[in-house]
Length: 178
Image 1 (cartoon, rainbow, N blue to C red):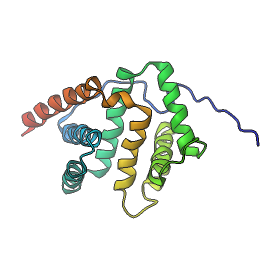
Image 2 (image 1 turned 90 degrees about the vertical axis):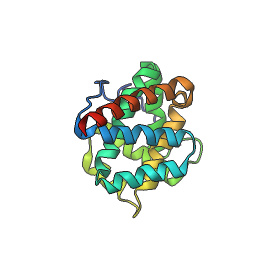
Image 3 (image 1 turned 180 degrees about the vertical axis):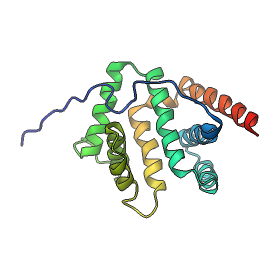
């Protein structure tokens, strides 16, 4: 069987605009996303669950997912060259379409498909993918798991410091809003 090799453009699933706009409305969502990413990097399930609980209590689930994606859209260009971003996109594409050479968990496959839909701007498909299971949490965690594979430098001291800087800015902005 012959396989086609598809080379998506380097910006396939990352936005060109890498600036993040902080507002009083989204500061909490972005802070939660940053802290969630840090808890994930530390394998702290209790911390992740606490953030998910806070998100649900604030009725900001959709905004939280958007904030996670926005956070990665901002961090990726800081940590990865355009050529590396192309490699990341190809890996996500392989994970999403099932051609990845190593078996991956179902929630990673679903998360990769979600990221591909996000890259295409297909909100309806994103919603369908997110609700393929009764519990959306594994898919949300799967998004971070996929990024762990395609963006390992996030788990370096430099990568975590980028997250920390954003969290500190957001905490200040949230405090001003109160």
